[in-house]
Length: 366
Ligand code: NAD
Image (cartoon, rainbow, N blue to C red; front, side, top):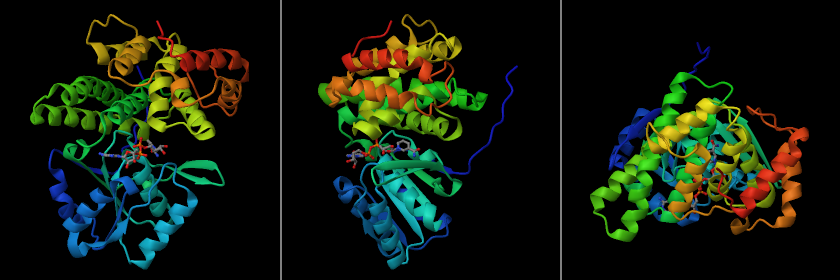
């Protein structure tokens, strides 16, 4: 019998193609009247469309979100929210934009309505990160959990195919580690398995749709599956602890400035291979979610193939990491280790160094 504690987190989810049409209703339900709309510079047009739709209920647009939420940007956005008298933030975009919303909420308590357009999953978590003097500090605070999330697959149609695949692998990583989390529970296990399966069935349609002229309906269906999977995987990230894989990605992303979703894509099969002996049941569930009830490949091999077969990078050297960085990466990865089903402290440094070497070269795990 599994003993567990399950703590439901309060957020409202509105899902479906075209669900952006419910934005005004959802702003009203928050009791808000003046929304500051957030986005990256690349998605300023998305943000402006949202502001136009809101009319007088839009306080303004702040389209300066960037990766890792620099404290300076967070301060500018907070000042802008105050100056404009905003009483909520609407964050349209990926994890970087949601992250900026969280930085505002942390300080001001403003409610966030998130409209995710990638599969990163930040919208379902009370986890925030802010970078000050080159150091990213992360923490948990229920104030930063978006109160409402509108998932509209139509808004993801413009997400480039390459980023769609790596972002989807990023989502799968949350679910995969959730399946062996120390504080896992049966509800999150179900969500994790369903999330992985939804994303695995979505990827051929997203990648093939672009190159083989699939119908618009089929592409939207695939995009819907991916976003549905991303929601589930984000729930897992927000509810249970992460382990070796997230530690490695945090280290590589933060200290070597490697792109977030791509790093997750490359590292995931290797982190799973490292842990596979320690958590065979979790590996079985991942393998089944990816391949059905009678999987023919191990979970790490199936994850590697999923990325490679859909055109994603599989080697850290292709992301800009240098061979000379691997020793320092191994040192950093074993410092202040997260909980992991197999120990990952200083005594395991040489095994972690080997793992990084394989990820660097893009070796397919067995
Ligand atoms: P991102 O938000 O940086 O987006 C990447 C790029 O894609 C941006 O230029 C963005 O504008 C663009 N983009 C996004 N959606 C698009 C669309 N539909 N069409 C066209 N362009 C689009 O990338 P991400 O991978 O979503 O987020 C990564 C960041 O989120 C990292 O900083 C990571 O640490 C953080 N994150 C935090 C949590 C959390 O729980 N706190 C969870 C996951 C990720």
